[in-house]
Image (cartoon, rainbow over all chains, first blue to last red; front, side, top):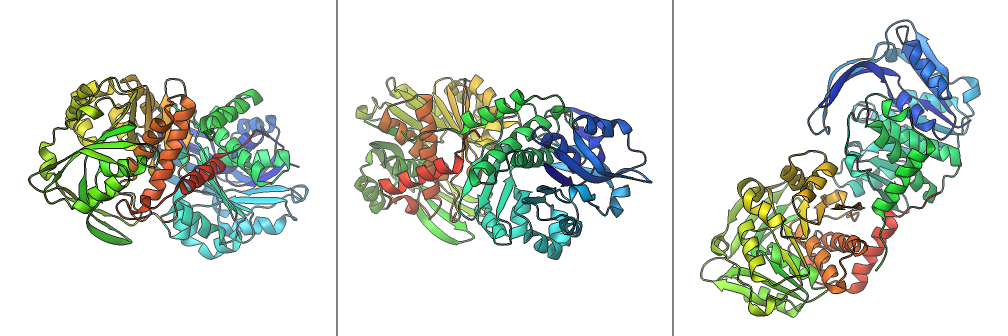
Length: 302
Length: 302
């Protein structure tokens, strides 16, 4: 078994300066799984409503994704609607309807409880904790969170951080969690809260990996055609965890490479709506961008 | 002769969350020269008023900086007053008094007209052009600019860009100059305006070097104690040009290294008020941070 992800499956309506789409396949578990499936076996635990198009489930299955933990409940699927401004950096949420996601209580099928690599996508930290109670000694657990939980569920989040190996978050969340504007200081403060490592996603500025001993600064892929940033963070997490699960190597050097594979998958994600940028890649596409990132950041002593 | 810089010498009053200082030595030519002098011979062309403390000129000379082009005019020295907010990212200018700088018309002493490396710090692009008319075939010319000139002196700036080798600017200026929010696209558009290379400074996010053939993404130095960001960009330029002038090698690989030395000098600059963070370094300090930046950004294929 490769990697288990627990998160959301949604239908997204997105408007960017370049176009718009209605009820497109989205959600953290979706982006994560499609990205991770290029590297390893993936199983998702999530919930959809009875209105969820069967074609999406077929698409996920056709990519080898284990959907046995994807539950269908009576009612409507989680829907999110958002608009991105001119520079794609800030987005406005127009509407969020949790629908069946509101009462989601993830249940990990017995077969998946032995998953060695587990990613807790951005859901209520109490539910993330409940997932950890259902899995048996995973080799590595990573999790994501957001401002909403940092503000509203801090106690559960603090408890969670002491039980995960790697926190994956964006720079604003890192600063918020630490209450410290200097990102380097903030990262160290988050490490003191429990996780062995943290990965701070900085969008067009790349990513920062921090652990007790050192920092790693990963370049962003120089995307000229950012079409829709939705799902970039979850695709990053999918590439990151997928590569770790594939290689079963959690050394610092390998975690650095995993950050680069995360960056690569996010760079493909943002080039089209929904998961469109990630559905027809081959290994050469992925390795090509990995090499480009190496060339982009390489320098030698004189 | 190493590098010639034309720019400002000022007395800065700065307030940050960590302290404040009045009439401290500042100005683009000052920060540039102090940084560059660790690498090569530096000559500055600038103007000060009759109130300018002699001790500052002595300090510059004691560092081997050629101040023969530093003119003293009757009147007051350029003064700038600013306040930085909590996260040090945005600053508010409280007062700018150009004083003798208002009528500054740089004259390059004959001995310096043969300078091989020339840096045109941020002044009116018409004056930057006038400097280029006074130097004879430099090996490499780099220049800085700012939003004020992009808006108000675009024609002169366009002319200038066709005559310089490297534009050094920050990310907001690059986007503004190109009228394009995507930084990668914007950088390519600025290259089309004339310069062979551009260096985009992104503060805590590092720097981007772009030329016709490739991009280089340089990490930021992970500064935990940013005390006062004033002068960071000019110190970057000083390290960058100083290293190029020292090595007399303008290959892409060496320009990449120069960006890293620029990053190193900026990282020292921000640790104290004025040039205080750069006055008592030795080569080992500088090389130490260069190596740290290499370790910080290094990864290998798996």
